[in-house]
Length: 182
Image (cartoon, rainbow, N blue to C red):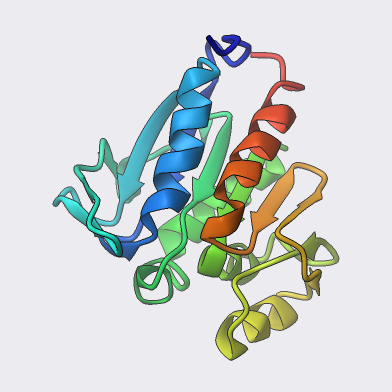
């Protein structure tokens, strides 16, 4: 049985309402829950969200009602829905900026690394992303230093490049959250 070292820790996981990447949500969520963290799933709508591989998730909260002060970290899940629903989402950007200012864990996987860049929190930071011309341009525009690795951590910001990195991504987030006093 996993040690409950994250007991009392609250994490917000943000997904697109359509075409989020199933394992990028489900793998870190399972790891965090097993470590004792409370995980809240948010999306841009309260409607059931559908993953690229068929997962169906009813969000716990609508993104617009999520407050940075309620969580110890935020994880933005990737997938093909991220560019359409999350990349330019001002509410999500504001939440990420506030959590970053408060030195909370800010993480993104796959195409959602571009969300962090678009929010302005990757300036002069090392980061990775699922590599497409658009996602790489977002990192460049956000003044991030792109690193072609599966998981990249720079301070409390953790990025991963896709579904194959979901396990290591989740483990890296847990390791960083374990340093935070709740």
